[in-house]
Image 1 (cartoon, rainbow, N blue to C red):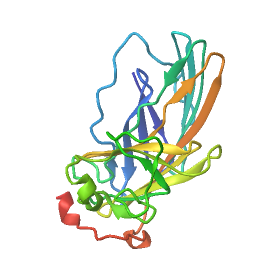
Image 2: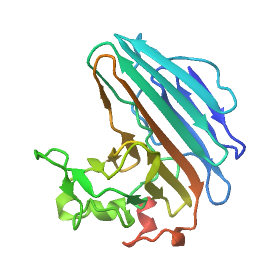
Image 3: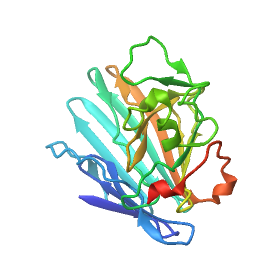
Image 4: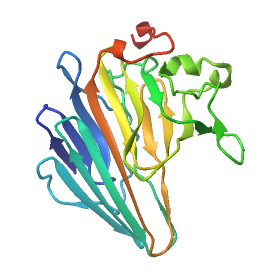
Length: 255
């Protein structure tokens, strides 16, 4: 079952009760034209384990999952400023691991390429996917340094990533506990900007030709332990000149 959240700006967010995932998000571009900005997401897992939820109320949706000793409460809230807040609390009777499905975005809408999406990520360390190392590596001087904004495609052209289909990497920053903005992604063609905030100190960046996601890290639970975290995805519009891009953008790659 799909549940729909709405706000005063005309945004609509569809949430799937089967896996508590965000399946669609209609948002305006710089000209006020609405489009679904979620790329093709992997099919939701259809199992006997389904989240329980009440009908949406004033832009809020509460969901609860209880399965094999794991109990999770998740609250979604869509604000009029374009922010989708997620507040999660999980506990377990046995050692468990819990992770949320991440929405996969394409800020231009449809199936346009996301290579010109410009990322700023306040991370000073990263974990190289597919490589063995004991500690995260410093991003300085590497293709993984997004502390100054850069298009995704320009970084994938670096030798270290030239054979990669996209990013599949964990990124880390200093500080956790308070909800803070960790990343911005801007699409020059539509003017849409996504801001990602988290109470965690890391995220997983995924990208391919048609979409990207910023994923909260899964949490490991010990018996009786309660783990809480918050996320926020905020969609708006912005003049691309205000986004201090450090590398050239070629909008032709989105055609």
